[in-house]
Image 1 (cartoon, rainbow, N blue to C red):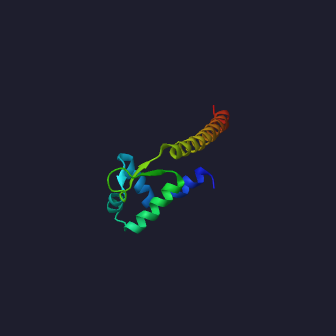
Image 2: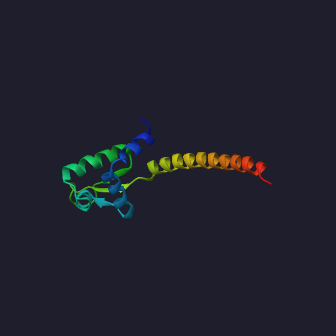
Image 3: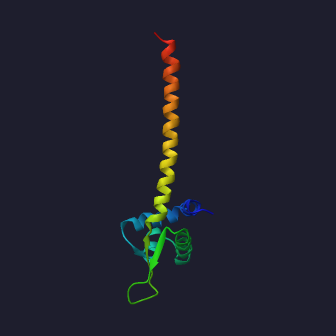
Amino acid sequence: MTSLDETLSALSDPHRRGVVDLLRARPRPAGELARALRLRPSAMSRHLGILRKSGLIEEDHQGQDARIRTYRLRPEPFSGLRRWVEEVEAFWGLELQAFKTHVETKHGKGRK
């Protein structure tokens, strides 16, 4: 599986997109994420594991209690996703421009 595939797969779940949305504001501990998304800790742990494996987030064990993990977004996977989306948008931009040119040419020649 490519990194783009892993990114898209990880983001396919609404709870994981919710985690990403929350982490855009600031790093947060797992418990805070679970409460905000109304998930049980075990379910949040599974979602965080998938997001970590895909590289979208990383965990930090700062502080005195090593059991408390804080999560933050990693920019690299999002850069790859952004490049892919830009390529798809460029493709459709060219296709739509070609269609527009075709329609204008076809209808422009028939009208006087």
